[in-house]
Image (cartoon, rainbow, N blue to C red; front, top):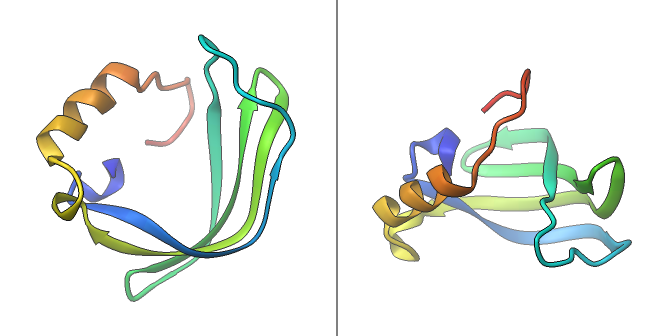
Length: 95
């Protein structure tokens, strides 16, 4: 959402593999890392992982998704507010 100026959101169409290694507990913060493999004609292919500290708790491989208008699902202004409240950038991390 941030990279599209809160105009679009991804809708996952397919994934090769998702593994849940551990549950996220209340109060824990998960850091998400995504590696984009391809982006063409509003379609994106990516892999990623969720980490608590240095421990991987979820991983995704070869997900495919399409960009859809955010306003079809959520109020973009509400999402900007929520994002500003929960996003805590780390030094050196691209936004």
